[in-house]
Image 1 (cartoon, one colour):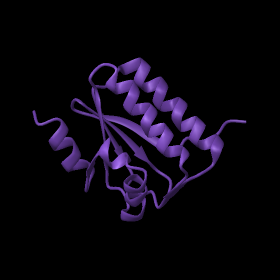
Image 2 (cartoon, one colour):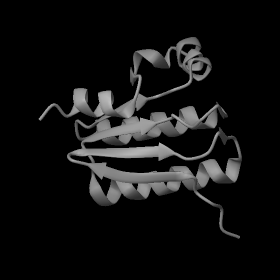
Image 3 (tube, rainbow, N blue to C red):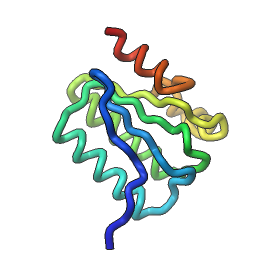
Amino acid sequence: MSTKVNIETTREGKVTLVVFKAASISNVDEIAAICNKIKEFIEESRPNKMVVDFQKVKFFSSQVLAVLLDIRAKLKAYDGEVVISAINPQLHRIFKITNLDKLFKFFPDRESAIRVISPD
């Protein structure tokens, strides 16, 4: 049985966009599928700049934090950068509580994130 992956991965100039399409990201199989899709994308294209857009997300399980840390580690291995955009204030609190807000940059929307991490 195939698990639906509710993300969209696109490029905007030199920046890769990972957009979560579901309001809730909590199913273990779905999170594993998301992780695998992003890992495959990173291995194939080696993006240098990545924006992870949470605009539609209202809830996620803590496993999503592990996925983000994994993405960060993979990009950091070749001086890449991952930032987070349009995250719900309640979800942003999770980053603060876990001190992960020190590891990621946050932007109010994807446009401002792209503008800052890829100014050319």
